Image (cartoon, rainbow, N blue to C red):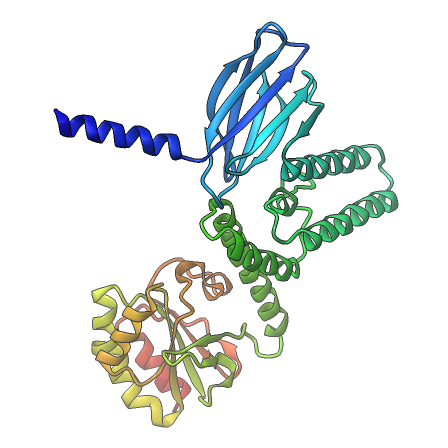
Length: 363
């Protein structure tokens, strides 16, 4: 019994020591109303609580916020968002709002920044809806885009850049819709990771940054593909040295996508690929094998253990690799043959298909 009391007491002490953030909210037009508190969970809202305002429309809410891990929190009256807040551990925020979504916030500089960007975005949407003239629409968009860029570059350590980077022109078009925006995303991601390494918001930004970097790389490779008849690749081998697909000195290259964690793929290396490579390599055949196992250490171990003599590469991105999107790979193993600067259309799925095609191309 004594141990139970000690554990319970320790739990109470820990709970008391957990950092808190406090919100004092007044909605004078809605005395006695329920105010819904929601927390941003990347792309959805999570309802934390519904607090009842007193006769003057005032309500208080306290929540845990870990140091170094600010939280986006929103207050709603019915279906209307009446305040947007970025709370840090120890924050004491005062909000005065109306039922239409207008509000003032004090005690949180980050929340004030967040409000200023939301107001700028609202003006942008209103201006875009006010005209149908293409030139004017273009002018409005460019002005807002430049203003957004200026803001995020001036506030690289503030999480308030997150909603700015994810603004939408419409349902399908982000404001940051240029391929080269990936460079800006990477700069901000790397900076925010040093300030908020454990933030799920920053981790989500990292994923979006990688997606944009892949898209930028794919576009670059596609733009240059006309020179060769196929998109080029440049991926790291087990020594970290980049190997360019276009730089291989071979008449015929087999572009092979596989998964080093799959036992059947490893057997395929030994039973099929090695025999073909040994037979045809001296005549101008090479294999460029792209592993889609994100565990690069495990992949390198397989390559060394099987003593695979061809070009083996892995960028550690698994199925998120730009190579997957570039060649529209949907399953593994998948292989293509490149010959005379172009990709052949030969079906390599048959038992002797590869051997027959190599005989034809390397005769």
